[in-house]
Every structure is written in structure tokens, then in C-alpha cells.
Image (tube, rainbow, N blue to C red; front, side):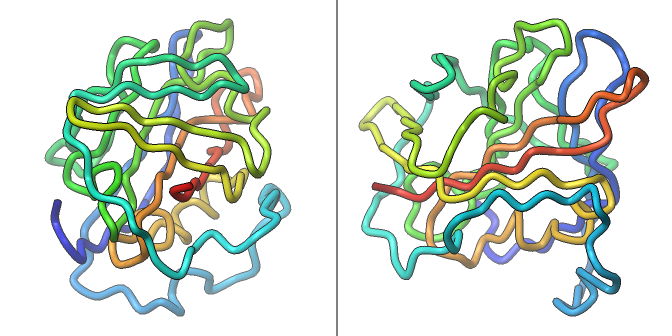
Length: 207
């Protein structure tokens, strides 16, 4: 894990074909004032479905090792998770196989007491994407992560639908590695017939 890594999303670009999913473009900034994240009010495309603060006061969990399996009972997800890194352009792409979730290996590992363990996955317009059903999750739903040396159970704390601009402005919050340990799932939303206009960001904290 890279502690204290500052990431700023400059785009949350999704593909335009039937097999596309989420793709998160990032750039590194030496200093990003927190006040710079929201210089203007969030656009109307931002829909906050949170019902509770996303940060617990502490986490008593311990990191588990991969390989990982992700299970989300409400939406029938039972998927393998593979480690991914951003490319030289700071673009974080999900795995090619839409049935797999990708764990951002430069962030926290699942179960670490501090940091965001970020998983990205495809939403496929015609089905078969690992995160197709993410929008149906509700606060309190269970998310399970199984590793080679243990398993963890999380509860969904918030589900936010962010336009591309809102995602970019809130990237420091989304990828934050200084907060108590949590799980963050990212995928696409709002297909307009040509492209995906938004991202769904789901935050879960350990049981």
C-alpha cells in the first residue's frame, strides 16, 4: 500500500460499447487543497443516497491476503478479484473479463485498519458485468471478501451516483488512504445511448 497517496480524478470515463464498464482516469498532484475539491455546487446529476456518515471512528480488522473472492448476496455477485494498477497515464482500468472485479493494489488491502480498499468492475449494458446490479444495493447490505488466509464481512454505508465532474471533484475523498479501513466499489451508471455519464460509488465498512 502507498500510504497517503493523493489521487485526483480528471475523468471517470466509461466506454461506449456494449462490453464496456467503468474506467477511472487519475492524475497525481503534489498538493491538493481540500477546498479545491468542490469549487462549485455539485451538479444536479449528483444523487446522494447515503443514510449515514461513511467513516467509522475506528476499525478492528486486519488485512487479509489475496487471491480474493467478492460476494454480494443481494445482487448475486460471487466473483474472483484480481490485482490491478493504474497505467502510465494514471488510468485505472477494470479487468478485461467483465466477470472479474479489480482491486487497486496501490491502495489499502481489504481489512487494513486504515485506508480505502478500492474495487472497480464493469457494468455491461446488455448484462454479464460483475457490477451490473450495484445500483440495487441499500444501506446495511452485506458485502463479503474472502482471502487466502481469512474472510471479512462489510456493511454498505452509502451509495452515491456521481456525474463525471462530481467524481473528479470528490476523488480525494473516494480514494482516501488516511481514513479508517473501508471498502469502496466503483462502476458506471446512466447510459445515455452513447456513453456512461456517471459512476456509482459504494462505500462499505467492516462489521
